[in-house]
Image (cartoon, rainbow, N blue to C red; front, side, top):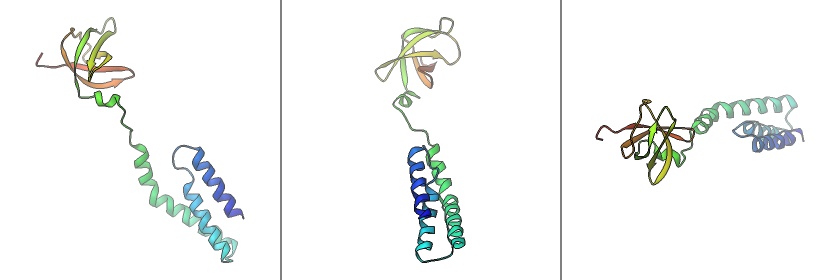
Length: 140
């Protein structure tokens, strides 16, 4: 019965906490439960639980971390690398400026900290908060 309780608790924790935390222990408890069903001693059950849990961690944790570490792309990420047009002068002293990129108006700042005049073409380098960081295109 204890192995089923450990299994249940492991699953509840897994569903409540973001990321893979306890799924390996759920697997280990199932293996231990099978050893209980075939009437193996408690020491063997515990050993099977520990070995199975840690083997599952060793086999799958690197893959799980790799998958969790990937940043999800957002619609805003599409802006990076795009060319836009300055619709309101970018003035680093006043901290003002806007650009139109892919049909959307964004607040913008100059990467170099220099002003960029209205109607100039710019390239989006990054996004900081809700502001696009841009550089003036050389063909302007």
